[in-house]
Length: 534
Ligand SMILES: Nc1nc2c(ncn2[C@@H]2O[C@@H]3COP(=O)(O)O[C@H]4[C@@H](O)[C@H](n5cnc6c(=O)[nH]c(N)nc65)O[C@@H]4COP(=O)(O)O[C@H]3[C@H]2O)c(=O)[nH]1
Image (cartoon, rainbow, N blue to C red; front, side, top):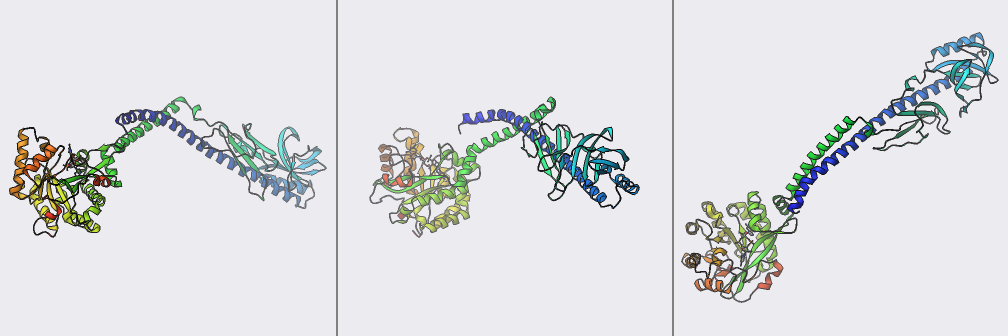
């Protein structure tokens, strides 16, 4: 991701998050509101259904009881019995006797003279119970009654039976019906929006309907109850502002956290960590050429890495970064494995071709790393004599700690070269102390060849020094024939590395730069230190 895009993200995201947070908070509040109202609706409807079932069951029981009482209808004993039963009932107000479609007596009114003519019933249930709803002018014009009759008995529902449900919570309406014909026994609140028997629910929905029936086999009652206006936007403005504001703030917080997470995720350091984890580093190989016969005697393994955008990052940048992040051990191990794999075939043939791998001072001093190297080489059948380990002069500043490591590695057959020679401050002193096999002259000196400068004279001195010290010489950064001829004139068996012989390339392109012939240079696999088994 480009820097500009990241900045866009960093600033744009919190603003978007502010808006989104506000909207989401309102949506969340609407969902909470719907859920709360749904719970309230459920509670109301369940209570109402229980009460309707109770009324129906009590009525059915009383109708059966009176029919089988054995009393002579409206006799003194019968009316006394009816009074006791009516008195004991919480949900029924009166019970009476019917003959020829007329009420002839009730517990409350005694003998009715003349008898009260019943209007046609509204519904007859499967069990033969006849039902009347809201019948006016029964005995007295002020009375409106719900009644149920069976045989010659009739019961009057108490006007208080549904008292608790007469004033439902604001917005709720309910119908008590039977299940098949939708016959309405009772109505509560505003029922205009209720379509009998249709359940309707959604998390954000503005109207909700709930439909519940009594279990099959018993009395047949159902309740349809619903809300028709659940809308957060109709709540008081300060509440809305508070909810949206809090949501917006939470959104901004989240947005900032996300932006910083993205920045972090896209930072080069994070990308490098991920690349190491996924094994995304790869190797390019640069030919090491014997200047005398221009034969490629080996190659230096150079780490390559492309960031998330596919742009190559220089090892001069990511190697110090990995060092700083404490990742060098895992980076070097990954490089070693890949470097060996890439040119394994050349390393096991009998050409003497060697691979030169860059290490850190801590790798050299680490006995576990030595074991790792041994294991990796053994598993590929590669001899340590075919591996050169380069340490930079800068890292050799702590050379007192390195001597042991270098000696151990050399004893195993590896050759140790000092890289970037001449760029550090202690070059000459450690040259005497460290048991190394060769030095690699840094390209800044090579560049000075032909300039007649003081630096050019230093190159001459460095080249002249290796003979008496008995160590090999590799010269980096050779770009011209003039530079090649200059160093070869001083050290005939010098090894050269540079664009003149080939750029660093992938393993499969390394052969393109190869020059065949006898190796007539000193620093080759066959030139291992004395006493070593190569
Ligand atoms: N101008 C010029 N440059 C040339 C020429 N020939 C080669 N070079 C460049 O010089 C560098 C030589 O590698 P180095 O001295 O080991 O210097 C290396 C080495 O110190 C470090 N490095 C690279 N790979 C690794 C690795 O796997 N591990 C460690 N620890 N360091 C590595 O990064 C440094 C830079 O590597 P690169 O960017 O690949 O740069 C390479 C190479 O591409 C030339 O003719 N002219």
